[in-house]
Image 1 (tube, rainbow, N blue to C red):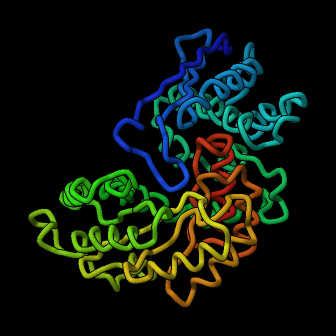
Image 2 (image 1 turned 135 degrees about the horizontal axis):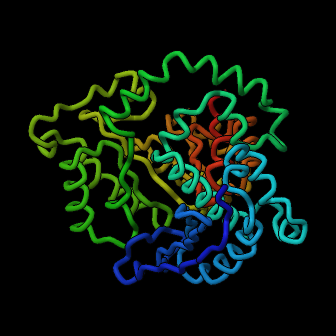
Length: 369
């Protein structure tokens, strides 16, 4: 049986700060970067994983990845794959490494890179893409592949099994639909703060022509400027002349768009502040952008402030604007509390911020419940 023999780390950085790509109100000097790890087995099996930083953080994360990945050396791959939940618990259980978290910060995202690499290796061993590996799981395999520590008060293994078994009946139809239509996605490429109006207009038109109908814009540096930029984007995405030939406007009152403040073509605008405001600031600022009808405000305040997010969501309800967060949610326990307090309309999981696919699955279960 193959064993994990060694690993390599790779520090990959892109100078996005030179062109303003990736800029927002909080992060004004970003070099989008990936801390990569490749796991090797005694067979020809490999697994690639990564986490994300915006530059110099890669130095620290790559060092942490080495510490976490070392725990897998000599382990039988099939033993690891057989219970990915137990494997994840083992990765996070080193007391000396856990102390500098626990389950948050650099050590947690480094664990995510290693966990992602192991999932990639698992999928390759079964000759499937990762999504298909997980879709094909039985409810029992799914439950074995995630972690329930610290969230069992919200969802137990037994409840998860019951939920998954109830969903089994329509699984094939849902898979067929995703294969036919693709997985829903939004675009941010036109919405970075560092862009000129001309670049915003060009990229927005290209995105509409490319078939996108959900658009995200960065906000938080200047309210008047954000309102102007939002109106510019709205003027393009709401105009049917920019739709590709043969693409009809979607019904903004349809079930799929209900509650999203969709415009006349069925296009949806979202805004993202990247944690730049205090709670009351966020409420006042976002109410001032109600004219551009955003579906939600993403990361309106500090990602750890669960009560603050709940306060913002409640205050914006009358304006028809929701709240989204999760990109910087440290772990599943933060999501647990966000869901318990009705603090978000959209839970945004990130397998490069959480400790990999295993922890993502636990958040999906909580959200589904």
